[in-house]
Image (cartoon, rainbow, N blue to C red):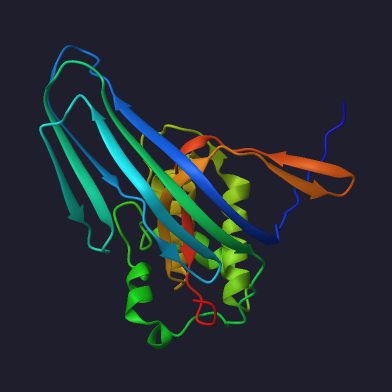
Length: 256
């Protein structure tokens, strides 16, 4: 049996998607040892969204709870995102939150290429994007090892796009998927080289922010539908589990 290097291929999908999807999303919490005196659960509400590539509209949304909770209230976080906070008292059995809604999607999949040089001029980054350069508890952009790796990965980059590609390719090539893990932060991910979608996103974002590139995390629901991707000589079936998912967005001066 011989061994040698193996090589991966990056597939870029192009085209348009227009679809309407009916979603049912349930989350359950089960007491493992008797009774829970108080259980509070905060979850983000699905929202309408529009960008250069994506338009999403939410309709016919309903939320049910089993058993009936003690209280349900609405909140907004520091970014303006809408959350629901539900609380149960004296919980003896499984508590379930079930959301149903319809998502109307219009997506244009292409490969926009930024022409912005690197490093970005901090004075050219508007405040709404500049806030996504800061370090945070799970995105430790100021950590010494994160900074060292970011510098080495982007040393030869002449554009922001090249720097982003170098960072994301390194993360994909060096971090193995595992869930759950004990720590979802960027530093823990760099040390363990493993984690789930949150770990991949947090480490990527920390490396980007250390390079002066604004990036932020996004959250939503994956639908578990396989993609049939045409490749040379046949097709590749790309599947993903259905459930909560995290990914990331990068800011470019010429693309937004």
